[in-house]
Length: 509
Image (cartoon, rainbow, N blue to C red):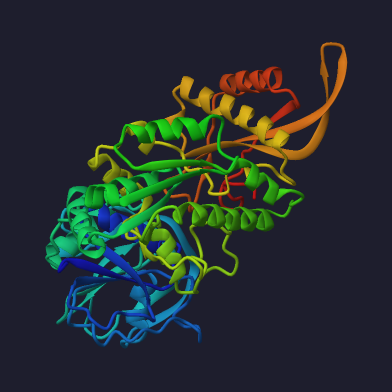
């Protein structure tokens, strides 16, 4: 592709958001850490420098070599990027008198500037910085100001370098998308050709070339990512794709059968393997969340390897890895110190000598859904809530038993079915129930009970990076609580989790 946009990541929490906004403009982009700039820049039409939690005045501040970029490719420097260009090019950056966070309005915009085409004065922008550009860099021309920030935007004379001290990628910047389009299309001349249809055509062609007549094995989970990956591969190589759907005994109620039935109508070559007993045996006596994840991951690999050996001459293993996973592994600060163990994370053991193919590795979650729609995958399957790889094991706090799994499956079924019946399911990004290692006193009839407590959780999000709890109707919560307590033997109390992420995570373990 000759219309790529390079985003250099300085560690900002918003970097992935910049990429998603660029792709919403149907423009392909890739994120690289600031210290790993690609040697070959011939495929890139423009560069965006991200924000950063660092101050440019700090000794350990990110300091990239931009000599191959400055003056050769159009640059849009955002927040830290704008301060970096000023600080190291003859300008002056100093701590702000007040920390500049939140909404502001552009009080002055220079006339006839292509970066601000169709953006009017008083446009709302989002600030997030504690330093300010006091003096512009050499050849700097001021383009916009707010009441508190004199140099809110500038360009450098003699090159296509633009800089802004606000974040156009967040929704609070009302004309942020327009500004990005002005820069990428109007200034850099980037073509808007990155569409789901174009992705499908290109990926199918690349898969055919890469795989040829070789066989591929794929572990299906029933989730969106693995399903879209399977349909893409099936379009490319047909019957040479072998899908394995493993029941780890920790799926939702009746999920193993219902998912297999869905796949039956999609023309996929799928084998269902019920290994429930094997997984529950591996989990016996384990309470630590990480120990449970590892036990599930190891057992999955053993079961998957056993099944893969029944297929002759398999060469490739397909995975539903998506772009946030890829970015995490090469982020500015390296992979996280502790990554939650999952059977798709960390590669394959040495005894599985298979090449890996990841057709979705450059897509964000919302893009995966759009590609799935392009491929004709059923709306109800694409709209499924995310479900953790270890399944209900990390929604049962403490050790796992068959009885606890039964209780949680029943509770979860009532909750999820209730969301669907009340037309709330599609308004929620992810929902589930958690079985707590707590018992409480209750009264049923004239009898005293001492039974389990369950927590219900429902969040809204776009990508899982941040999430807010959903304000479900009281009437719905009341009915759901009553139904669970009346129908699920072993539960006598229901609570609702109203924690947002951050500081809480979506899952409890």
